[in-house]
Image: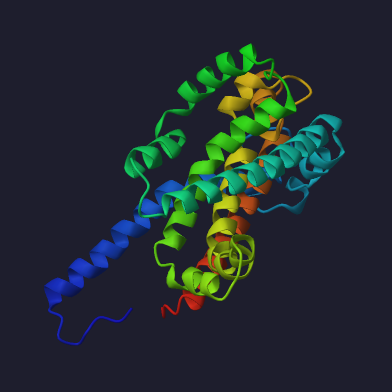
Length: 282
């Protein structure tokens, strides 16, 4: 963004100094993540840049670790488990979060703030505390080391994201549209499908994507309540670091970074679409 012509030298210096500071902070935060990607193409089984890599020798680079990721039975099983668990947890979290947000959107809900604080508490409480509590609770219900247990646990962690995004969407919702539909003889189900749902759908999808990313990347709860059969990708990475250090972990981490970037791009597209639907110009 160009500065106005009337800006003084001091204001220009402060502006560009602020940009430089933000750039340095960004590089400090993103550098450890970016380093992982080139290391995942290392031809040798080490976590360091070799002389060949630094000199850009083609023989020093290889995709052997990506091939191992897609041929190793342990990684494939972990990927399958993570995908199934994340999809199921996302569906549960999206349904529960949407219903909760719609219920809290009513004006006559008592203790609304307290209920909202309770619903988003999994985002505030340290994950290690939630994991320990889920472990003791699910053990009593015989849900520990089961797919049902890990799905419910990840759904509990992902529901707050759906509640927040759908609540934000409903904040600008025109409730007179619902009353108009009722006045024309529409039942509640028809009104939700054809009036409410199209308007809150971007918020639901955004929250669902957040819930999916949270489930797919979660490791602390997985360490507590998953067994060998339910081993997910993050837990497999944790076990790989402790038991046998392999650059395959770097390849998996690079794929997770790519997935995160795609999720962010999708969320930005949904945000722009939601703004367009609501008539907000950028």
